[in-house]
Image (cartoon, rainbow, N blue to C red; front, top):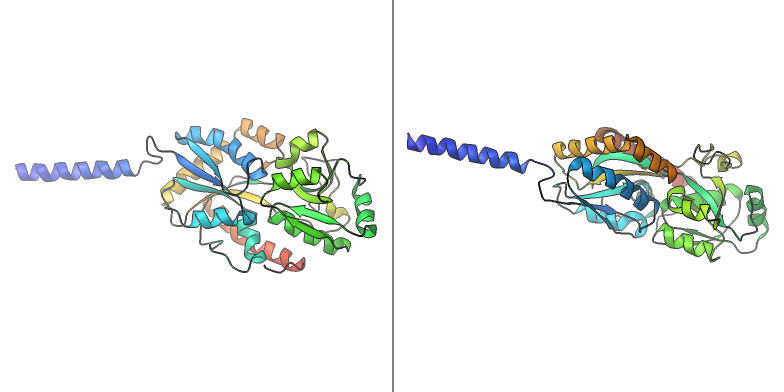
Length: 319
């Protein structure tokens, strides 16, 4: 009888331990969330707004860690090699998962199998910008400038900017020297300082500079005008085909447990649906796009194909 009781006790203890092990997040544990661009970038701004609410729902602190470099390559490679326990996550973007497969000859991560999609979070509206001291006041001025200037320079801090620059040159019929940066903030600073003529930049990372009168928006990188800046013309009004989708989403290492993915997805969708979060997103030029994990996985596959087509049409060769 004592032996039987001991067996039952052992089973009960094992079951309790297994149950405790399945609690996510575990009491006292924090979550690291990797951002693939520098502080102040659109992805960083969006992540910090989301994290402020998300950690309340999860009941665990979330520590944001920036790992910029190579259009998100550094962070994407890093997350692909982490333990799939849910305590190291990534706010991945179209740069690393839609564009890099086509603009880089080799990747140390698989853009589809190298992550676990958790939830799509947002889109990042981009626009063509110059600094406020530029003689270029509008899109017509820009076209005249690129047609008549002898030397034109343009910067970019991510793959979206790189692809849009190449597409614009092809569509408008001009050539320019491209100046790559690790992330958008240093590129913005140099454009404001007159180091190059123009760039494509997202609303989220540049809103403060626009409000301060240091950056002048010329046209949305889209075929249609944006509700976030309805008075700004769309590049597609002159050069149809500017409809790339710059997106962001929460991901984890490959092989995450479905129950952890479901828990994270549920809390992300809740956070993105809250009026206070939506309002802060809108103020920063961000559009929330919550989704299920399955929808996000399908979306990533579709976007990889769509960006590949756009990049080939723009004549960008992998480096």
